[in-house]
Image (cartoon, rainbow, N blue to C red; front, side, top):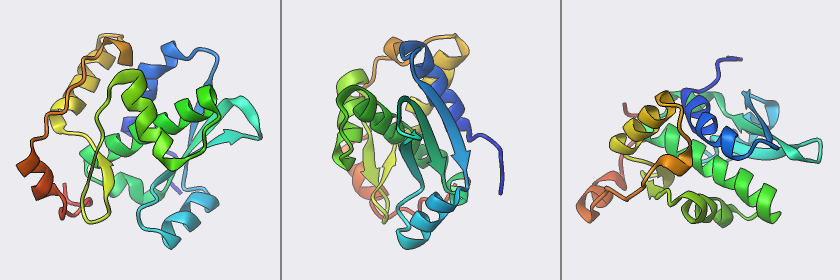
Length: 165
């Protein structure tokens, strides 16, 4: 089992940590629970849970296959998991749909759902923006988000292989 922290986790949660100083977040790679969930449903690459029922302590579990995904999917899924953290921490909402709505509502982050697996995705220019703001010591509040994907691009990505880099 790899112990390397996924780069998208480091960047995304590095950008949100200053905004939620009362919350502890840690990644868990390859846990038995996430690997079993991924085997049962190939769409499951990550899951956010409260740690031992403590409302301010969260774990984001990543399946080992997560690192095989293309960066747009890695970042999209990680941002979706951030949405779960926000929905759980601020609204005690455990619904799947609450995750994307939380990041859209709190930060205006537009997650696309593409590929044959209908996975969360962000474009490379948005990934570049995340890196730039992270390297400048900023937070998600410093980013002006806008969907950069036009309808023809969205249609083209509907059948893309998420493992293709």
